[in-house]
Length: 435
Image (cartoon, rainbow, N blue to C red; front, side, top):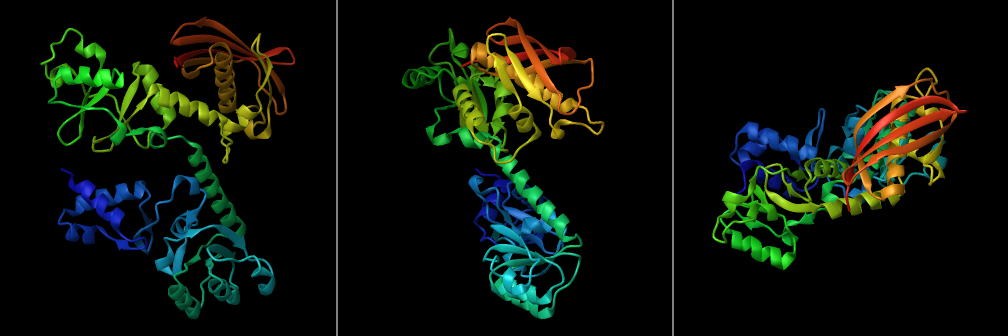
């Protein structure tokens, strides 16, 4: 049986895009307490089903698919620029595909304005109305108001007119940054991208017996299965080790491992791989927030995803990406790398930042392990010694040495030189993710 929290979320999902919702209204419609309704609305906001806008309220927005993450809704723009909605509130859920800055004469400018655009302009009253008639929303900078006729037109066409106190350059920078952040988020692999759904998952009930495990084991050749109760809530996990020496009639509930480690849809693949290595498990159940089983992920799924991610071009660049791009392999036999320090990697003193240096150390170590063992790895422990400051545009030479390499752990010594002078040294321990 579904909980009240889940019923409210299902109700919100079924609402038409653009509908306004409130705690009091949901509490009344579904006969639940206002506290329960409030928690469900906050969860819906986290899932990007609704958006809360100051002086407007909470509205149902379109759940954007992952491949369109670089697009924003007008509601999100209002929050980004701390804006005030002057008209066209019913169109806040719509998605914009481009923003343009109106800095030309009206006739010249309109050649660049298309439907679903966001035109950024100051207090140019004629421009506001003309843009709305062309199907574009308007963002007025400098904190200016618009005419009553423009507000009426915006309401009629369901195209938002937003006012912000920031100047045009600042607004464009803020929106551009938000789009770039979305692109970076798009590149983060989540469990929801790679998990095996419940329909394709083999699982057992707590009321089953050991003989059912053995039958399922013969059919699937898998050794690990999640265990659920009658309502499909995760209650445990069972492995081949748990059933050794047990009779066929023994209940699963008595031999399973209770309170197993699990992940949610929004857990990153990187985090899941770390937990698999740390706990030494080959399979993790995927659950909803209320612990209902959604599917599973295996060690093989995680490995494939990490290898595929490494081959994908990056749309939004993080500091991590910038550092990795500068690393060049000089010798695969002696594990020697070369690296150039760029302006993005420096601190306010003009020396290489601690964060960039740490990424350089961990990445050269990880690449060395791929050359030696061709597997994925996760840093467990690291000690860094800084001997000299590293200046901007320095050409560094990195020497990696494997001190100890076992099936699950690698210990490495990494030295960084600038013109044959030792500038840094690190001792790093990696946990290895086996194939």
